[in-house]
Amino acid sequence: MKKILSITLAAMMAIPMMASAHGPSRQKVIETIVIDASPEKVWAIVGDFAGLDKWLPPVAALKMEGEKTRILSIGAADGPTITEELKSLDNEKMMMKYKIVDMSVIGQESHLGKTYDVPTIPVYNYLSIIKLKEVEGGTEVTWTGKFYRVFQLNYEKTKPRYPKGLGDSDGVEAITGIFKSGLEKLKKICEEDEGC
Image 1 (cartoon, one colour):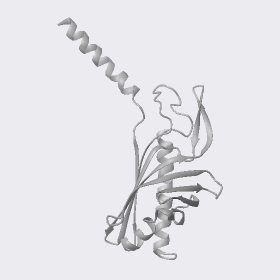
Image 2 (cartoon, rainbow, N blue to C red):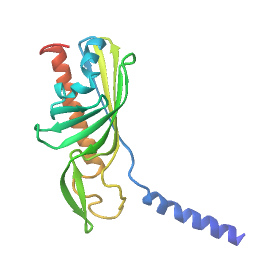
Image 3 (cartoon, helix red, strand yellow):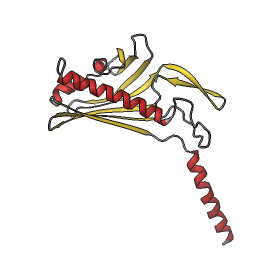
Image 4 (cartoon, rainbow, N blue to C red):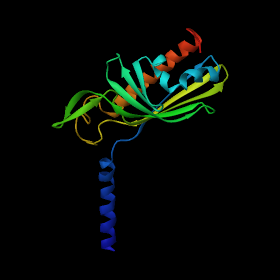
């Protein structure tokens, strides 16, 4: 009986240690906007994988490599790059999935005696889904991003826990800002400027 109690107690003590040793949690950003235009008209812009530079403000230039890989220049034509790969494109469901496969390194940060690269956007293993649906008042565009923070270690008791700019909130803030600026410009294009 004492042996069973000892094993049970040891297992219970190990659970908190295991919990603090896990890797980063997957983050998720969802932004939605309603555009006063038909889904078909909005999808003509959103569904063009080679046309993201027309409605996403940070993208200064876009170059395609084949039909499923695009290289985005951020901020300026010679700025840092993000390479994205199209995973699926469903014109009937008006849904697109793509992932980031490579990014430029734009700096470095030190943490606990080690140096870490800072990528163009502070995310790792990023997957994006854009989906359209018809609603009263036009088209609802939902943009979802799933990713992990860049810093993969989990130091629970260090202050700060992550290198500057490489934590969970940094990735969430960056992706939220990108999504909002893109959806707002898309709405403006479709409703005010040249129209969808």
